[in-house]
Length: 217
Image 1 (cartoon, rainbow, N blue to C red):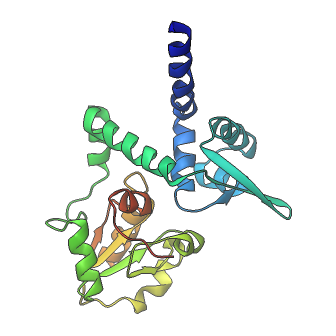
Image 2: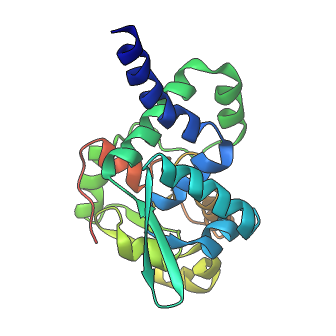
């Protein structure tokens, strides 16, 4: 019986081993947005294609990531929504338990850029009523795969040229891939310099879905 019990724990530990890499966690976060090629993952995670392929091999061995071929390209995706929930839960526990992570996250927050007194349901309600404008600053293909209700697609690279489409009389809430993503922070900084009342939403689609809230495609 001890051999069987050891085997059970060993199998579960395969998941832990597969996740025991900062870059693999980042790849999972990227795949929470939509399926991507190894070239796109390498670019977004700032690693070589060779290293991205090695990380994907480890994640596929643990059955956390799957793949499909379309012509010349291979597209990688999470094998199940529970993998995204695992990432959100793991990061949440780390934020609660690790002081160094808490300090690092606080250092990213600029005064006045975080939402105060507005929970997720309140943001959703106010967006539906047109009281706030929610913008998704991720790449357009990630928005197309899944996005928050009532959000507008305004990729960060295009935001400066599209400011005329945003009303200055309403608060603007920007979000991207989650708490570790810098795109929403950069968007808020740009908007505030242009006179907008802009705020950063720490959530991405993975956090939103993990909380049981609806998404749109």
